[in-house]
Image 1: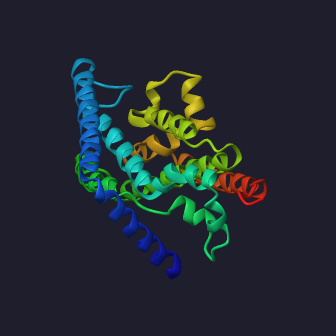
Image 2: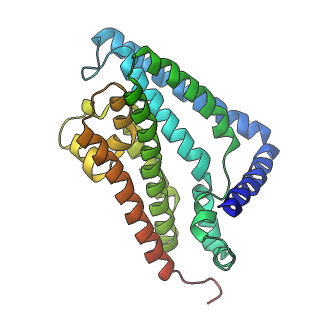
Length: 259
């Protein structure tokens, strides 16, 4: 475990150093993410002022859902940013070098370099989420479930990214799969309850965006039953197992660039 932690730390330092070379690009990236966050927050405020509620949720509750989405989404991007660069490893043949190294190729491909610019966004998101969460006056148990279900949501995010890596090996296509993932997860900016069936069922049971993004905030509000909590953790675990199966399946069919 210590080997992987130290390896991740070194790879992240290298990633940070390479990103800091283009400071202007990094600043524009941060500006874009900040503006997108502000504009959608304004959109939420306008809607809740006109309609009073969104799917039965008050303004502060709707903001809690949005902030929870941003915490999970930005944290997953911070840790899994290397996935966005995986295609180059495959098409260049450098994946061969990764496979022969004494370290898990999945670890290298999934966690090969954190994104420092996302780190700058995570901290204010966590602070804002904690502040809005306290306004809901949750119980200790609800607060603990909220934190645990955020980690469960990150597990589902990890499973999605592992599936993208597997598709990258099989098809050498990463960008389109990532775009589909981003579009699907963006539906979790607001409570899944807003959507009608069958969209709501699709986003809950087929592509578990609702469990990933909405369930943690609902748990904080005391709106999730014990079965719902167990189901959320089960979906997270099963998603990871399925993604690992497809990763192994893709590796067995990987054709070395040197062959």
